[in-house]
Length: 163
Image 1 (cartoon, one colour):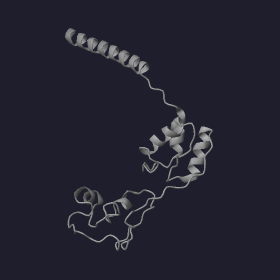
Image 2: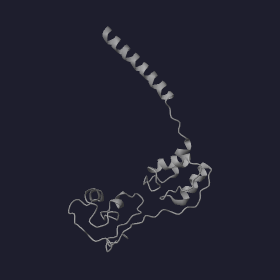
Image 3: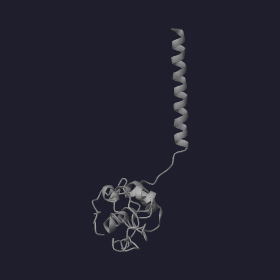
Image 4: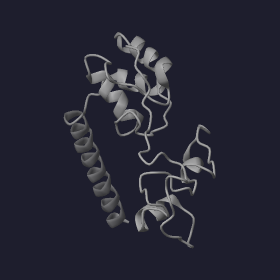
């Protein structure tokens, strides 16, 4: 019985010492984060699409808070209404900016992109892009498998078999 009591007491002391060390370390190495970053992130649509040029909505929120102005910054999913809300949170002016538009150099239609091969495996754009760049001569255009339609939570993408 005496051995069990000693083991319990020694484990309790080790736990208390470890807890004290972790508490001191958490206070010593605490990282301050501006609370406005969380406020801006709440306003953003949380699409994490990267269309703004930053790694997700939290990266965009961080960049907006740290920047002196919102010039050149635009959330393509939320558009100008979201940027106006962000400007209100940060106390900055939201300049009207043109939305970014994707440009497909091969004009995107099947008539401009002749088929150069045919793949009979699993229909996935991820597979097609990693294996052979798609069935057409343009590796930058739509691969036609519809992965983007399934991934888009906003129902903003449609597949047109002709284009």
